[in-house]
Length: 461
Ligand code: GLN
Image 1 (cartoon, rainbow, N blue to C red):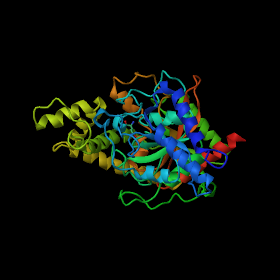
Image 2: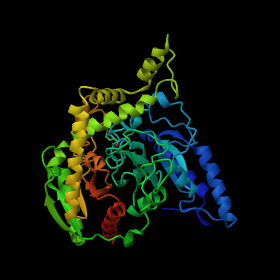
Image 3: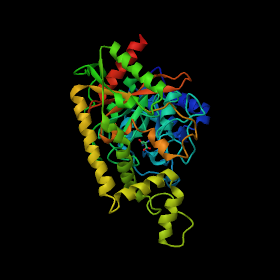
Image 4: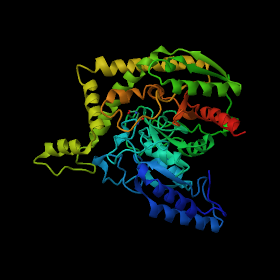
């Protein structure tokens, strides 16, 4: 990562990033730019460097911020009309931490509204285009952050991952940390029991650097864990050097090219001395069903606060108090947000709670048990990130179920709170990037990154 110092001016780094953002405007990466404030911050850093004062570990490094993180710079829209005029009075802990180290936000990146989606097509501000083929989706929901990194506009970007939103759009390294590793304070809540804050960067080491700064306990988020992100990647060693390849993730519904490329990543691991063993995890076939009951239930609760009274948008078309709630929500949410609110309220309603929500939570426990069993044998698990390479814009928007199927391989680790990393595994014949997913036991995030780094290093030779 290029850090500002005596020879590299922060202002130049920021200017270059802003120029690239402008060059790639057609990709619709950003919802808003933060040029003026970014240049002012960069000038401050350069001044400090000139005076020989202490600057942080990310001094002058421009980054893109998924637009569901609060900060004083710009509106926090969550890509939804209901929040598009919302200026947050607070700064997310993760943002405060990286900015304290000198990182500079150049723009707020596009996403599926409220992070509901896997293609960035559910954004009120229009879809972000794929960096490898602009007729295809960027993936999502952190599509803007992913493409900002893929196009080298920035060297890292922040995202959030509730069920795959960092891993799925990343065609390079994107990490969803262990649940509780990074504070959720100040990030628009989606499903509180699986929301995690992570980042994208092209090198595993850069991901590690940023995550090491963001991680740690925060009094403002009671689910945060004591800081365990404390080692250097070279210090982290696998106990068994054994990786489990989840056979269930290579069968029906998986694009054969994706399956082949991910298996080839397994071969690269073998070449680095890892034993790769195929094993079955039959409970995984219920992962998607569990997620699409629990997650909408939490979404419905979290989104009840957007009522036209406390935040941003209030409908002008009101005759009474009920209209304020109903019309503001109706105008402000996207169709996908409404679908999840309805499903969520349904599965929580009396009469259906036992049949859906409770049952899903019980199945979730079985899923967690299955992972625990697997980690008795393996250091990490390997499977694809998504069943297909990036699909065409508009291809799946009319059928939510086909869209949800894209999440089949990312949501199980989310439901279990495990760290999972998307790594670049290769390209299809058509030149579309394909990611492999490494899943680890809780708090083994750095082990996953060290494995990715070993492969990176071996390929650089
Ligand atoms: N694609 C998944 C969904 O639509 C995951 C979203 C996320 O992680 N924010 O729910």
